[in-house]
Image (cartoon, rainbow, N blue to C red; front, side, top):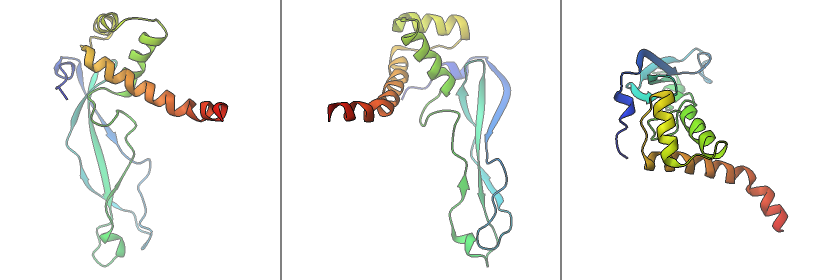
Length: 150
């Protein structure tokens, strides 16, 4: 996957978002709060209004005598950006909106995203973003179509 040019533009305001659990987890064996064992390295992500960094927090119980110390660390689910992507879900939604609601071509989407949000995209990136949207729609409506066919 080519490196995104937009994540190196001066759209970054020093924001860092943590992918963290709402409250500190409790060990199911000894009923004590787990500790933060590590945070991932900062990953630059292109947001709709600004670029930001993302870090993921991992929890684990650290006492050697507790059976919970042998279990793998836990972390929260990533709801900010898709796996192996430089753009967050808001960018994906805006590209899908421009394509399907406003009926813009790929070139017009590139122009609009650059003009309105200062995000540089290419044809391959737009195609990949729209493919994710189409796959999501097919999974949502597929059971209805299968039921009609039967």
